[in-house]
Length: 514
Image (cartoon, rainbow, N blue to C red; front, top):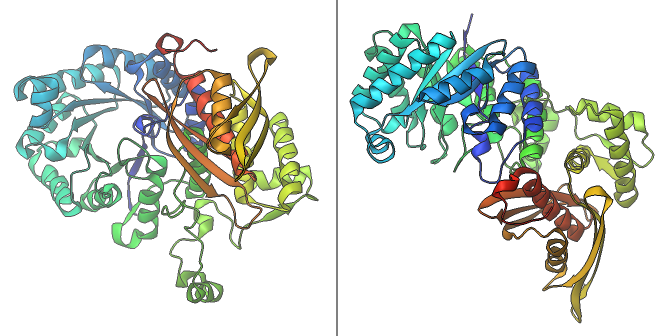
């Protein structure tokens, strides 16, 4: 029987550190339930001591999610351990994850302590956590830039103090696969009590090697991998859950391990995380990108028609995609057909939600005729955003041309049924629309990024716009889609502004509205 590798998901903790991402408790719970359905072994629900909001989210997930261990991150200080335990103690399987820096550059310039002091902090705080919880994980932050001899000492001490998992983080994405594998092997050889703990790895993607390093570590003996859905996270992101899991599954002949995950949930969870975080998945992303199972070359198409395995090493059905092409609906399709297709895609909507999506489906079908799965996903995403809107775009009219001053009239529906309308001019229709929206919403912001892509093919395709804005030092991502790219642009800005209005605490706001 193959060895088991545990999958530790940190999408809601490390993944939330992606610039522009701020998940509320409801969104975290929705992701946690999806991870539970996927049978993820450990869900790191957040950093409970970092804020009241994070504490609430971690505690709620610990209370309501069963089947996965629920972990919270804790610095090696007493308050974090105590607060962390309060948050996760109601879990079916709680875990406390204690960390402290181990590299000299961190010890000297961040902690401003010496090695012996840091070693004692690690030992004492793991012991404190172990008094609360039988499942304690310890991470020496920046381990791959640390003195290996110091790491061996630290791991021995924390295992003696009660750590049951020792995690080796490549915190800044510095390691090379062969080097990282050798480090994991040396830990097994040089830490005398390592047999009492599971070795875990947590790899960042600064050099594009997070997945490669994680897999090299598994081959060397690591039996837990820490990952994020879609590879999101700080800077270059984290090792991508879908890539690690499918590599282990596809090359089981080489790795000789199993994960126990229901991989048919991968695509649905990927889309959910993208929708809730506002971080789009790049088209050429491995496993879950839009192009992952598309074949344009005539030679490839010929091979696929003859035998799928000629150019596909993964069956799309293994990640939850239907085999045989994208299913198309049209304006003659009924409500039951729409519901059935959405369920196949992983969306089980309440009646009220389905009603709104069905109305939007009919409107879109009238505009473009045929609706495929990608269109349906965008409609569901629009519905999810609408459920948390402070302001909603009600009307947008633009006039522009090479002999006209671009002008936009915008009407918004605001809190408590307010109707707000204004007209503005700009350098183009999008600029004019944005000026009008900003005048009505009253949240000062700076546009950092604006991207446009087609959701589907053809001249009648929906356009998807992604914007990134800065609001008082906070970054927010917004996504909008429509067959009219100016309307999609307005929706994207509205999405980003609504995220700012719902997620920046009132006491931190430099504006007064709403």
